[in-house]
Image 1 (cartoon, one colour):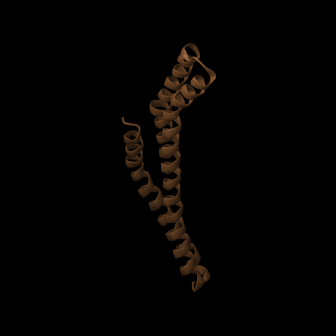
Image 2 (cartoon, one colour; image 1 turned 90 degrees about the vertical axis):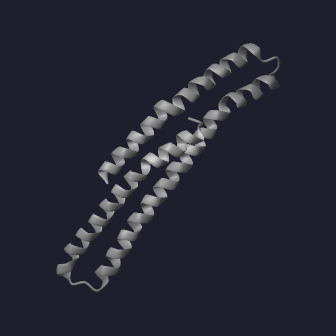
Image 3 (spheres, helix red, strand yellow; image 1 turned 90 degrees about the horizontal axis):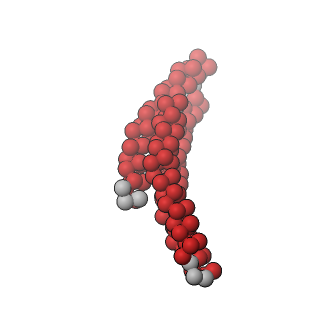
Length: 131
């Protein structure tokens, strides 16, 4: 699971640096131009909303994708725990260590499988951003 955490951090950093920050930069520049060109307060507010819309949209997509991913990981781990719990109910004390080992193996497999999903997640997010 530690390797999954590192992969998630790497993915989030990639998205932040290569996707979100450039959009934020453009939003700031757009907002600065609006300060110079807006004729009224209403025009200025409308311009600011338009400038920030791409950032808000991509942040929504990123948050949705990451929440969905987290739920998948949690469901997988929950299945491992359920199987271990079911096995432990009728197990002898000597079998508990073996059951714990099986559960840890299952959890690690969840991590490996989940890590393999990150490239597709990243691709969907970039695709949503038109990149």
